[in-house]
Amino acid sequence: MEQAAEKDLRYPVGRYELGPQPAAGDRERLVDIIEATPARMREAVAGLSDAQLDTEYRPDGWTVRQVVHHVPDSHMNSYMRFKWGLTEDVPTIKTYEEARWAELADSAGPIEVSLALLDALHERWARLLRAMTDADYAREIEHPEWGRLTLGQMLELYGWHCRHHVAHVTSLRERMGW
Image 1 (spheres, one colour):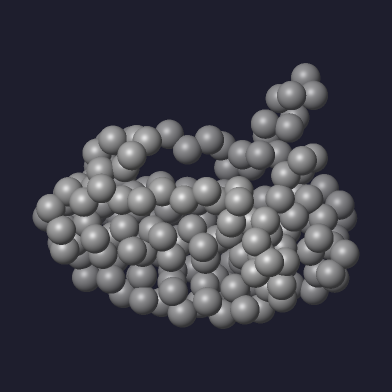
Image 2 (tube, one colour):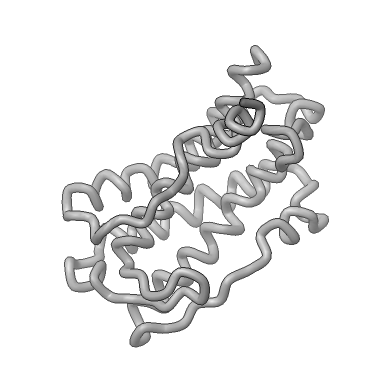
């Protein structure tokens, strides 16, 4: 029972499951999620003290501060993956050690820097995503762990990723009564 409760804390919007290529209407909804994420993250962390930012969202999990810094780290990687996928034939993308990145000094600093980065990054990313055609979304990348993915599937993954990490913060706030 305790393990199930921790699982829920780790995946507040459910685990990501790779699905088929999303339809055009689904893609529009996913781009809307990506575009709105900076504002949603700002709202999620609004008014938190340093002590609250340094609280783990679950036992043995990242702190809220680390989550806030992780999102632009991850999304910068995704943005580049989209650009490679749009300009190269089935590029093999590079993965990164996200847990180790979360331990670096820049993940312990003020969150406003990462929130500003998220604002700018998502503005450019959404502009790119909205300009993509059906054929662009069908282009593929090679993920070293997951195999071939379309850019449409990548969009779905990062729409989930946005909701996933905002929910880490909002579900913690709800549990703590913040």
